[in-house]
Length: 384
Image (tube, rainbow, N blue to C red; front, side, top):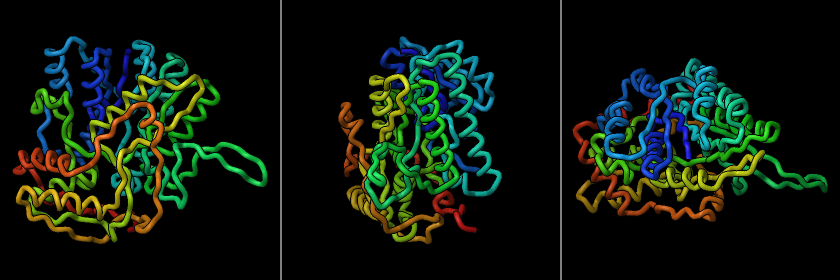
């Protein structure tokens, strides 16, 4: 297939590009490097030193039959994305190209506005370009489990069957997002559902939990030159990646608030496997399909204890420390999201266990000298 990956320089985008190229699909990656610019705003650097996208693509293309192609541009430029789709006519469009950080979106007014404008308008430009140039393309859009919040009922996959005053209907599952970033994803989902219903587009919306991990089989072929970025800071780093770096430096694992908050999550490899399953099993015309993309869910306290226990096996003296929660969120809540669709289509999950933790800790240890402990504590607060 011809696969267009928007946000192809990112933590998820780059390994996804290599995965599909290795399987002889024609891959085109698009990026505007806005995440790199935000890193510079805050002064954050990823744990590993990463070659430029152009250099990684050159190295990859030397050793693989199917070359990856690059296009540099911005979804906010509607002519750019229209021209790309007109030129490439992709079978699948994987859309990662959004500002991906909740803390960034909550840090001030300007960043909140940028997040919503960049994400919502960029996605709308893409939808209009698909309608005009490749209406039969399958859009695979990265959403987030954070769209749902923590409702006091089971979280279904995107839709909810309801009975009200004796009548039945099927509606989009109620959303209660926890940041301006998560709100932008809710707006995206509503806009995409509308265009599927009215224009006949086809889309898979992947409501993903947080991702952890530092490697994939394609990266392992030449990790130094083909690696993706590994963030552990408060803006782009996910909680497990932060715990791994804290454990390696004997810094206490910092748990926000009570630590009873439950979160869905998955390994980086499974993120790519889920996207592949969606691509190989496209929805019908006019179908807005939602998959909840996670393989485990635990409380923050459970995650911290798992990392602490595994760390002791390699001689790390890891402590756990509760700190004031910078976020406005429920800390004691019901949480039962469903994820049956991807499992039924063949996903064999990589379960979070001691071996997985040890593998990640050992890889992080190789970059121990690059770890900046100043990144560990949060400075962005939801309530100011």
